Length: 279
Image 1 (spheres, rainbow, N blue to C red):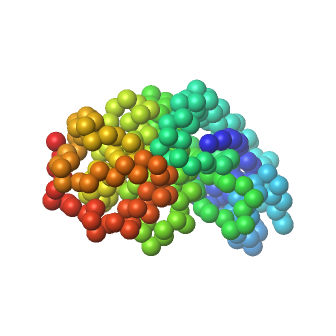
Image 2: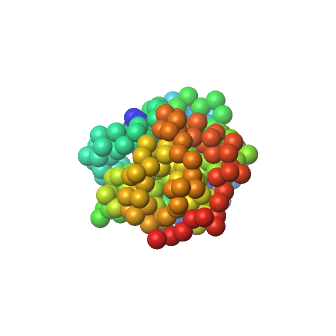
Image 3: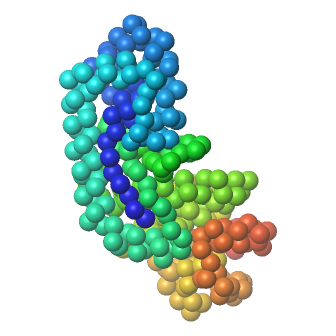
C-alpha cells in the first residue's frame, strides 16, 4: 500500500462550501456568496465528481466562487491548519507504515495500489470514499479529528476505509458478508496485531453474530492450526467447539477475495449461531 497525502484547494473549498460550516466566518462567507452568486454556487456543487476524478489537474469551468474563497483570510487560516493536520497524519503513517504494510499484506494477500489521501480540515469531521466513474486516481478525502494519544486509530480507520472502498463493488448482493469479513480483517485482526490488544469486539453491532459465525473459518484463513485455536479464542474471548468444525487447510492459501467467495458459497453451513459462545 502506497499513500500520498496532499491538501488540494478545490477539494478543501468544495467541502467548506457544501459541508456543515466549521466557523461563523465560513458560515457568513457562504451566505454572502449564495446571496450574490446563486447560479455559480449551484454550478460548483456539481464539481465534486470532476474534482475527485483528477484532483491535481482539475480546472473549473467558472472559477468565480473558488477565487472569492481563495482570497479570504479565513481560507488562508483554514488551509494552513489543514497543512499542519496533513503533516501530523503523514508523520504517524511514516512512523508505522513498515509494520502496517507487512501485517496488511499478510492478512489481505493482495496488493492495494497508490491512494491519494486528500486532507481537509479536521473540523469538517468527514471521510469521503466516493467511487468516481472514470477516475484517473484512487482518492479518499480525509477530515476526521485526530486522537493524538492513540495514533494507531488513525491508521486502522484509514486502512479500513481504503479496503472497504477496494471491495465496494465486490459481491454487492452479499455486502453484509463482505463488510463482516473486512471488519474481521482490519478492525479486528489488523488492529489487534498493531496494538497488541484484542479488538475483536470492535465494529458494527449488527454484524457481530455473523462475524462470530465466520470466526472459526477466519482462524483457518489466518493459518491458525487446530491445536493453536484455543489460544486465539482466549485472546479474542470468542469460543467454539473445534470438534464440530471440519478443518479447512486450503483456506490459508486464499486471498481475502477468495475467502469471501468461500463464505458466500458455504454460508448455510457456516451459520451456527447457537454453537458459539463468548468466553
